[in-house]
Image (cartoon, rainbow, N blue to C red):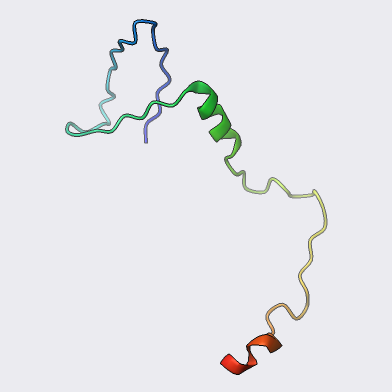
Length: 73
């Protein structure tokens, strides 16, 4: 995916120089308002963002079979 930020003029006419990486043929262009794009970026997850923000633990019997499923085992 290639992202290019452009300023739409009031005439609503836009000329786009297509990067060479985009192959010739049918291409889909998606126009996203700047505000919506900024909100999308805020939702991106960052690996390790919670490191050092608290203690997490897992029960010793986490992998043990549950009594509720004895009939199915």
